[in-house]
Image (cartoon, rainbow, N blue to C red; front, side, top):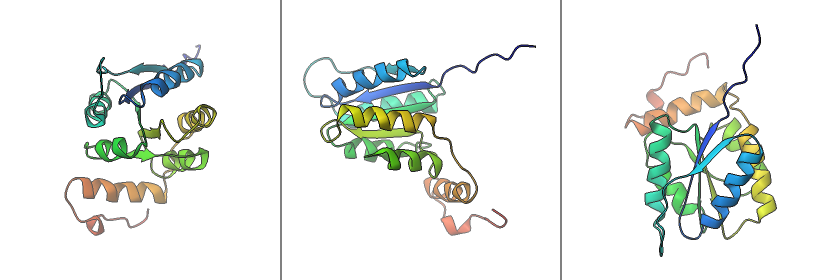
Length: 165
């Protein structure tokens, strides 16, 4: 019996007007690395508001049409704030390879937020490569995610039973 390769992770990207050029470059990098990448609908003319792009990416992830998301705006801050309002998303604003690694291994981030204005192309490529390859460690970090999920559903995180984890 021959093993079939797992399908590539599906990554959906969203960007405002300041991040669109960077999103296109990231989509190319992801494709070169063997991932499935696409940019969500983008406003064609003039400024584009980042909350709308965060919503589109979040909808794709939460509906199961994408495994992970990448959001890019001028600083990455607005995208991070907007994405973290969407139930089930764990969006991390990342500035280097270490924060990329930890956002996945400790926080199981399913959305990466980046700055188009503050990060160079080579650094972004390194961040993407690390973030896509890193896996969640579980263990004590899983306990913490359970508490984040409690907060997201309006419960006190101290109410989460973490005995033995």
